Image 1 (cartoon, rainbow, N blue to C red):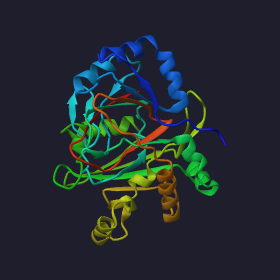
Image 2 (image 1 turned 120 degrees about the vertical axis):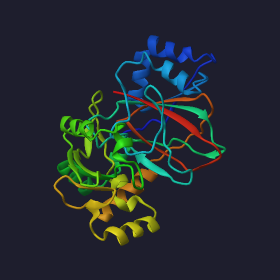
Image 3 (image 1 turned 30 degrees about the horizontal axis):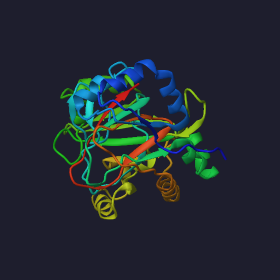
Image 4 (image 1 turned 180 degrees about the horizontal axis):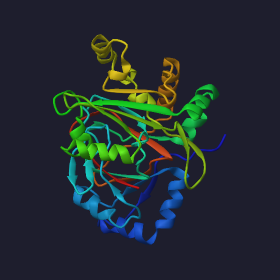
Length: 313
């Protein structure tokens, strides 16, 4: 078995000026990318990246295109430009490991998180090595995900319902904009008479890292499946929808339409839990993560917490 490096790699600076990390990205980019390929994530400490303006300025010269959070399924608020809150999920809800937008054709290559307000207890942006995760998956499960891929289904309301609407998901009030996006990104869209929509999209279960060539676990099947909800919420969904899982707000099955066995989902969740790494946020910290080399999540927390995120492809 390959030896895995501990997450995240810590890069300390002695300069409290946010421009210091910008200079690192400009002058030491090759070293930054080399470390990312080895570790998957770098935690920059001492750079005082403590608000949206500093985060925006810090990564403005990092190579790649900055992304809006189009097609995203997590509740977020845009702060400035392409800087968002990392999530608006309640503090008591644990967010499992996942690769950002792995169900989409437009996933980010890199994620930048900064800490504006550190929580009193918990609240780590958890990390997991996608290479180690794939090594811990049993062969039969892994072969099915390789061969079949994943089908993701979302039923989004038009503003009158629970969870994100399609207007929030695509940052538009015009359904024609959503239809155009779907045409350009191989997403099947069905528009209902009440203004709600159903989205169906297909994605691989694993991918090869574009730089290292290593195969990594890269999907959100467990997170999209209704059984990811707390038991009382899943039971309420079943009471309302019965066995019509395709009509629930989110659903995932294999790409050929076969359901993903509950045994597989339990294995995936256990493997992700086993490989979850925690670290403690401090105000001004900046985390740079390779979205394919590592997956991320969020621990439960107490006290105010404000982590910002920006994405680059």
